[in-house]
Image 1 (cartoon, rainbow, N blue to C red):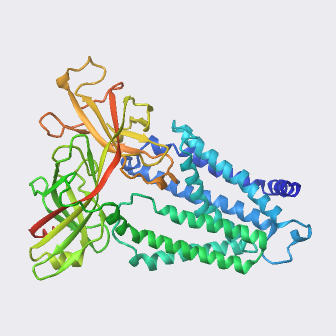
Image 2: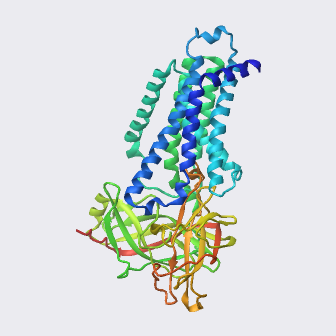
Image 3: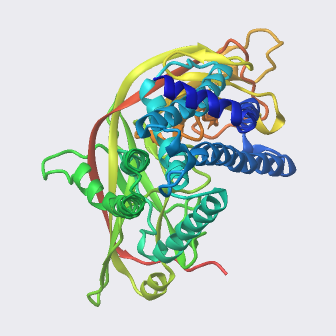
Amino acid sequence: MNQVLHIFRKDTRRFWAEILLSFFVLAIYAVRYPIHWQMQPAFTPRNYLAVVRDIDSLMIVLVPTAWWLLITRVVQAESLVGDRQWWVTRPYQRYSLFAAKALFLLVWLYIPFVAMEMKILSEAGLTPFGHASHWFLLLSVASGFVILPLLAIAATTTNFARMTMTLAGGLVAVELFHYVAAPYYPIYESTSTNSHSVYIVAVLVVGGAFIVAWQYLTGRLWLTRTFALCVAVLAVGVSFTVARMRESQIDREFPAPGAAAAAPIQVAFQPEKSNPLLAFPSERPGMMYVQLPLEFSGVAEGSVVEVEDIKFTIDSPDGQHWTSPWWTTQAMPQWTGMLNFLPGTYHPGVQIMMTRQQYERFQWFPFTLHLAFAVTELHPASETTAAFSTSDFLVNGYGVCASPAQWYLHHNLICRSEVGQSRLAHITTTWSKYPCSESQPEPQDLLSGSSWTGTAYPDRLSYIWNPVLANLVQPDVRRSDGRMGGTRELTLCPGTPMHFTQYAVADRTQVSLTIADFLLPKEPR
């Protein structure tokens, strides 16, 4: 134990500059992070948004860079490569050296990192010590993707220059892999009820910790490098498998209903003048969107149905048959909110995607289009009421919300949660036609508004780089005749009750729709 503390004190005295640099970068990150909930980048002026993005990009580089300098200097102070290092003659015991370096990283890297995250959560008005599982996940991802790879490279190279060359070569190899493997990864993105990326994190954490400990305790360099290569290959394999497994997962977790089972929602093909059938190029090269005007109805009272993914099959008269993979449903921009449906009738435009070659092949004749939707039925789990305020106000069981006064956030609510993505919630409130300074408005001068936020399947890994998320809540204001009401002339007064209803998953299934003699629309010129 004395030797462990001796090495720790020696490293602290020797590398105080690297420690202070790491502290300084983390402090800057913690000080500027509140801008994520003080403004909403999607609505900021373009020049201000460019500055914010530049700072974000700089911080994403500076934090790992500071860690890279600190880790490399500390580990290579007693090089583990070769058998003639000066520290062997001290003599330092290998397990003491390993324990001392682990203690150094715990005190001067991990604890400041956790303190920085707690400061951010506290600044956001959230509980710093809440949700321990998310803290564990946060530390695991930081370790698996940054800290342990840096430790492994530093432990298997002789000096800073070789460390830098190896790290640069690794980054180039990752980019080359993405370029070469891109055609083999699914072009369709689908919903995942569980974050399978945790598997990659587990491989990197366990593999990285084993590599570092093995090199420190045995010094068998080439065997350590072989283990490192195996861990890298395994991580790539898991990454590829995760990308491919979602298709079978959706078929398994969203089973087709039996013949006698009632569908939780009814879907019909309903073209209208205000919601026409459209085709237009996707932002993805070589792909086309076809926007289908659909009608959703038949949701049972007390339930909510969220449409997750869509899969379609084309059967042409000449015998051609093609089935798409599952793909996350996309709604037309004019459709307010996500594809979440309460009891009632709704007419969103839902997009499907196909390659341009498929579009050009099938657009000349009618065919049968089969649609399958992966849907989730949800029931209310909790209800909370909070009084609206332009400053921060706490919503029990949900998070901290506020409505900033900036013009580009006019009549919007921004909420943040320490768990990253929030559970699906429906927010309702009332708006006044008159300024808040005037007398109490009459009932006929109040308009009800509602909005959705969150998701049925929150991604826990979203917590990693954004521990406090700003979820924009846009009011969906409707008059008594069902027509949309403008929001510029409306006022949401401080003290107005806001009702938050959170939903939990009750059932998952598939809903199908067949459109006979379907003809693809022409692409606009």
